[in-house]
Amino acid sequence: MPGAGGSDRAPEPAGRRRDGRPESRAAAPDAVAPAAPDEGRRTLALYLAAAVVYITLGVFVPEVLFSSLVGIAYLLLAVWVVPALVARVR
Image 1 (cartoon, rainbow, N blue to C red):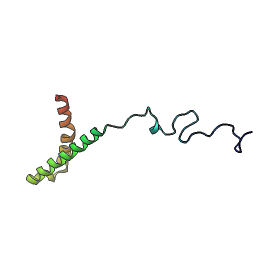
Image 2 (tube, one colour; image 1 turned 90 degrees about the horizontal axis):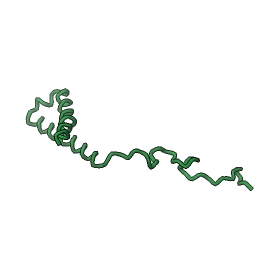
Image 3 (tube, rainbow, N blue to C red; image 1 turned 45 degrees about the vertical axis):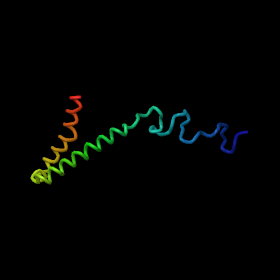
Image 4 (cartoon, rainbow, N blue to C red; image 1 turned 45 degrees about the horizontal axis):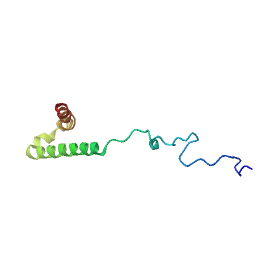
């Protein structure tokens, strides 16, 4: 005799669809893996090194800090162009 809900089927496991796939795409085993932790640390170290050099440069040559365009150009150069050139040389 069916249960009070009128269904003969067993209850679905939590977090699963009827076809057995997980409800969220992030929980799927074939989902794209996040970036390696070393890549995040490398990026952080790159930005911190660029900041230290820029601040040091600003202490000794204060005129460098007066232009925001120079700061943006420096950041672009220090964080994107120089690492790309170094990677190409390797």
